[in-house]
Length: 340
Image (cartoon, rainbow, N blue to C red):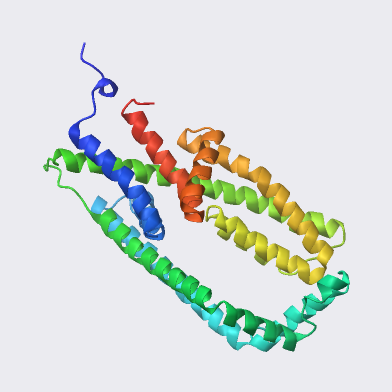
């Protein structure tokens, strides 16, 4: 009886491909190329997902091209609408710097009234003092802000380049009569496993974001009003929670910060309750999220938590974001070679 594919030894080409992928993971993280990689994988997966569903009657190549065109139109439209909204908002009275400073000063003034004297001394008393404090802080941290701005711009540029590369790769077709060389075939299989791992983690992240939005919506729209606490911009915060939740780890930080700041505009007590609620809920969600992602990549929650802890220690926040995808890829790679 012939041996099964799982019992066959790993070939030299497969070993080289595996070594290449193992070396590429820390290189991508150390060179801050994670936005480019994830943006490229996202576009690549969306093209392959949309093409057969929206343009199934077309040829494969034409369907992919139409799907990619639709994605580009959606991305460009979203960017244009965002820029237009920001310009209109900043030119309006509510978006002017002076009005924003006044609103911030009002929030801080309400907070000062219920705080101990030693804390009141640290809080600006009016918009002028707040402006002076902001200017001083900006001046003292100019180098750090310049570095952060440069990194943000570099990350956005990398993401844009990654999208372009992902779109071009998604359109690539191998002739049916072509026989790839062993190393090309091995690398194609490995990158396919990485793409599949990304696909599973992203769809799991959508479920996580939906769960997070439901819990936050219950808190903002039901729990707080029940105790006669009515926050402004509740619908906006719920939408922001879902959109930000699509980003692993950092998305929760963005939405939570917004909720706490809005709560502070009502009262320090509301801000403290919101902070306590979010900390408790998201600590529980941390394990629930691990189970949701783990079910998609066939890994236990403790495996994923351990991978995230290790990657965070090695690469910081990018490591935490990348951990589910890279761990899912490595587990698929080792499983396919019958090593685990």
